[in-house]
Length: 200
Image (cartoon, rainbow, N blue to C red; front, side):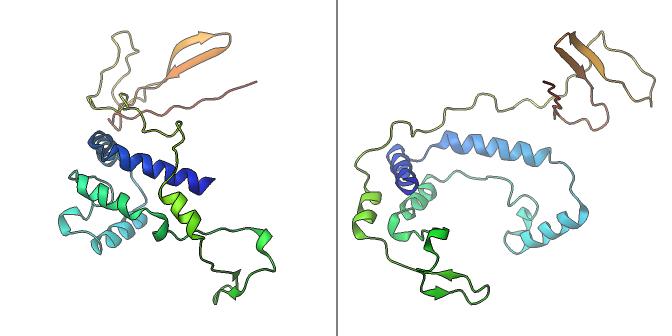
């Protein structure tokens, strides 16, 4: 059922064709994450950059794995054309196969078998008779940020001396809910951390 659903979705994607708006959304999110990426450990960052140097041209060494560049509908169609049952390697792992395998993996001595998938199944997956109506493209996301300008503190905010850490402010205090807000005046990034504690 899982494989059948996957190929139904792929058939739906082929019928819909390449969607530039989906690329634009993922491109915008990728650019935002790259622009405001948090610092990582120097050793991890160095290793990733060195690996990138083997895969990307010099001008994309830092951004290559993170950013989406030019939209290419033909490339999308070409990838979809490759996602067919005859190109699939289906791996099934289960204890129910114990004692029925005929091969052994050379490094870890794992028992396994390789068998061909019936032609009838391949044909059915390649051309689904119907597509589950619950399978559909996502709706456009109108909550993706595009304005990254930093907003100042409200006029009624507490004033503190320069160099003094600004304390959190209590915005809402009710019997069942307290909301505290801490303005970031150190890192100056349009990012938000939400910390919640739910007591029941």
